Length: 55
Image 1 (cartoon, rainbow, N blue to C red):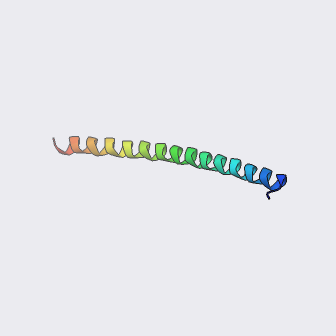
Image 2: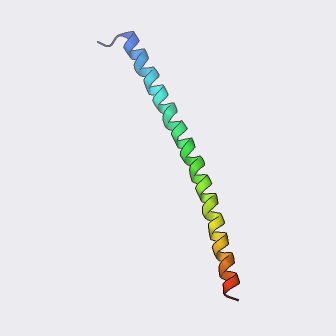
Image 3: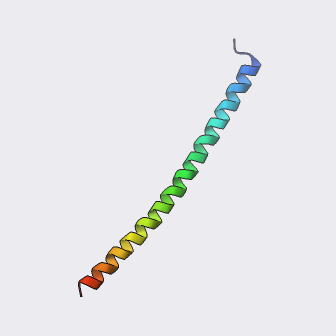
């Protein structure tokens, strides 16, 4: 037998767990976007230097 309070606590725990996972995913996506931008800048700089040195 599970009491109502335990059931409520479990439901609350599951909801907060889902929220935590969603927040973690959002943070990961933001970080990935930041790293992609840095990576993009590095690629552009590498291509630019290649153009300069290949003259």
